[in-house]
Length: 230
Image (cartoon, rainbow, N blue to C red; front, side, top):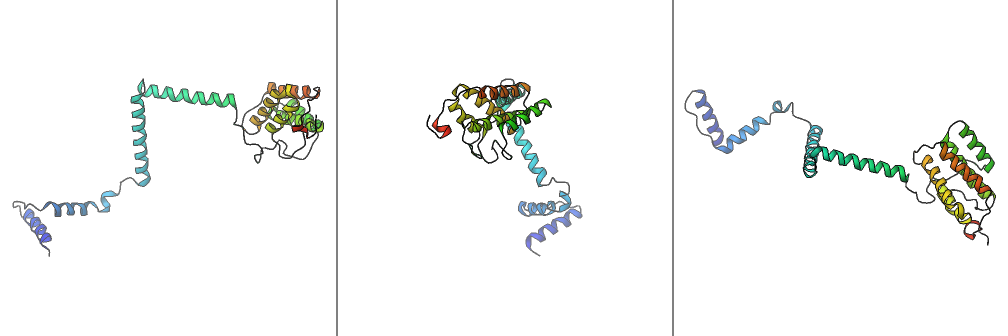
């Protein structure tokens, strides 16, 4: 038996006999306590790793909000008001600006997703959707009718994979008086096709009116859009 173990045993015997306890060195006493506390029975109800992680996260979040509310006029209530205002501004910007413009030619953004159809076919489909109140589909088909009609009139060169934005930009050079309306129609198409927005009857009627107006407009030929000299 070592000196340390003998001392501890002697101290235990003295305690058991009711005599004055013997002072054990601090280091052996601490080691003995650590060994005792390492017994699994003392840790059966301890939180697991996930619980400890969540606890620390909530403590960090509470400290963060506490610091922010302390620096914000009105405390926690003022912080909540600021967060709500920022969220409202973000929602308003999203609604006003719609979806961000994608890079030209992005995969999946093609204006025409099925086989070739005539402008008349697309107009018929648009009218059918409109009569059923399916405004998203009506806007899509009417925009396709516009682009197909411009291709049939040789104002646009047929090109697979062309997006609505590209078609509007190219057509705007031949039809400058309608350039802004073409961009708005392309944006309406993008919003309902890719942006999760919902069209309504006025939105469809604007695209329909543009289609009708374009049919009556004489173009200003542009070599960039037709590939032939003006």
